[in-house]
Image (tube, rainbow, N blue to C red; front, side, top):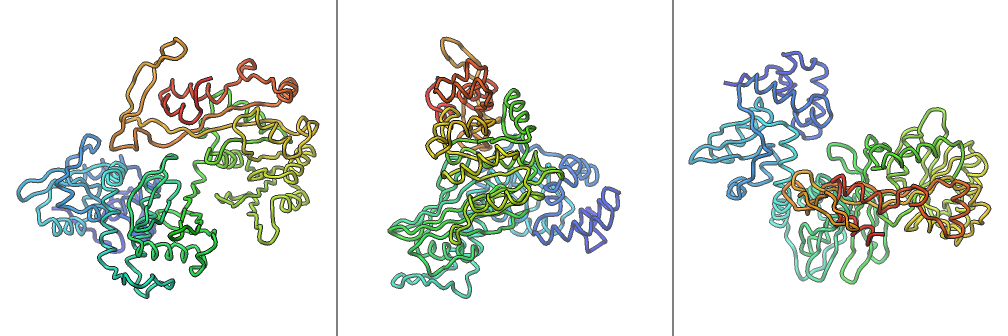
Length: 547
């Protein structure tokens, strides 16, 4: 029989951990309160915030409660259990059904001390339970991988059942007094997108319904569709959250949503009128500063040395180039985080600021009042800067100020839209930068692309024929742990430090990266194919045919 906790201000698990010396009482009280505020299981809060590891808690619970340990990695969900146990129940009580007999149910749990949860599961399933212990991080991952779509569909069904539409009348611009079902659905939609690592959410209205798609690892996929009456109310809810004008449907609007899901999440929102209704695109910003490190970018060892050498210089212009969505901004933020020291005065001008970096002066442009890149840069230069980051060089005036700042003792970082490093020079020339200015200001040009990473759980080894040479590589397969055989993305880079010799050659269009010993985008990508990080098919998709 499991012993109940005595301290009612603590969760049962917290009480046990305090008694056995793994947490002190004051700390446990604060953590329990925080977990309750976030509506999160105490064990989940401990693990997600790295306060105690899953392994330590798993072994502790196994010893304390004498329960067997189960490995979810080898377990596949049973389709019949999805009908018996709804996914919202699994998410609410944080467990996984393993095996069912006539009157009993084996379940995987991480916290065997939570009697309230165990009683609730037994009540909802009308079965006696036989619990097995699993690691919290494994349990959390398994639930969100295998019960994700059902959870969203369940919330959609629940919402539709509570809404009453009047087909003859157009939906009101003013939200109804009791709009709780819509609020819950929107919250669930945002939570699911965040948990699936989506970068964007698209709400695309049609004549009869509204399609919802997530962009995951650069690829769009449909997750559900809504009837237009409900979609109108969902769009209104999103506009309210972003403090937009809900009555304005003729003009595009931009806004920002702050959403809390285990942590603070910033979301950019843009509305655009279509022939049917407003289309909404939500950009989920990665605000995790801990991930902004140069080591995590995906640079090859030689490329990393080139970048760090350029960053040590007191002045110069470093340009990151590539198409939209190639990860340029994340690269600049990682560089800023590396340079962020107490001795440096660092300022950035962006459109808009995506990630807040403590210790750096960040300004968003505002075209409505004439606050553009050039205006802010002129102000920065009067405030004793050491390092300036410009979100993007778009016009001649901004380019001229950036070049002049780089020539007068400042380290300037910026992005530019061009395909490869060799094209960057002609792009700068086309917006008014002279050859002399370019030669004396640009210190490093970086071109980059994002490629999807192969899933480590299912990638298949195969032989690849390239230039009459056979190499070992991997190809995508697809499993329950990934999306189309891929999980996450990494960048491939092409770096060109502007030596005197290269400056002369690139201005005449004669530059050859291979001859100079630098890896081109293709070569850098091929190294990651050989290492099993990405596939040859993915490299072709992003770069094109081989050189």
